[in-house]
Length: 316
Image 1 (cartoon, rainbow, N blue to C red):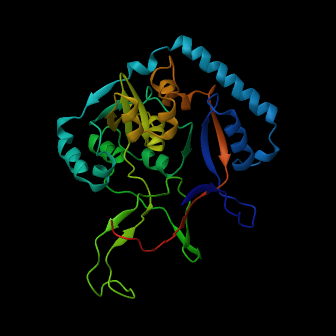
Image 2: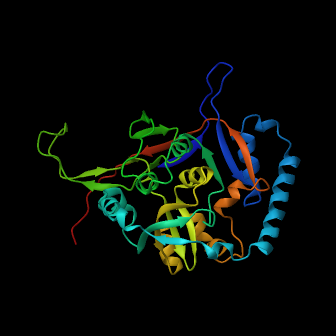
Image 3: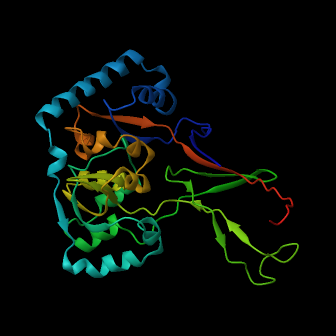
């Protein structure tokens, strides 16, 4: 199974849909930034690499300045318990099957987290339909803000399915959240409900879809790293919100971190949880660090190949 993000063929005509993307300069890896601009940004192939490196270097120097001026900033993040009037909403979310599958192995709490001091590992966010939804949100309404941050349902982006060959399938979506879920054994359907060439003894399913879409973070010590919900957190901050409702999982050692964090965070936890001044969500609003890029449309592809092997062996 393979997942990749490709630029689809562009339609003929003068207008090409583009997306506004905010990129945090000065963060690893410089080579990733150069490759992204060259392949994904409008007219990026003609950009001057020396100029790109220079602006990245200037942002990296700015981070050094922030290390001196804002050492320990991430440790001062404000965390507030959930208001009593939202207890029923929180209980309903905890009964949600997506929630139970997402937060099933570590201690967690639902509360309000300060946006500016959230540590970030994802260095780019898009301005899209989530930003438009946040613009119409009543930030003074706790229930509306809770539902925006921790939705029980979500919009399903379009998905295309194509059979490539015997046992090979390609699934495509414009969403960067498109993914394969873990395979699981399914209950065998009642006789006659599934068109097969004979009786079934077992069924194996591989789900293709999207993430649960809950705004969530990981807390280690006094810091909270934003794990999921970057676009909503950015959109809320753009609208003037200072806090957002968030599911925060607590980790106390590296083995626990590997259960919930991305590979990037698990590989270098000291950078996010011990550095004097790691990248923070508020950096997306610092003109010395954040750059607006006009990005060409992309598609996420999930390719699945089914290989079945059968044989016999002696019982021991």
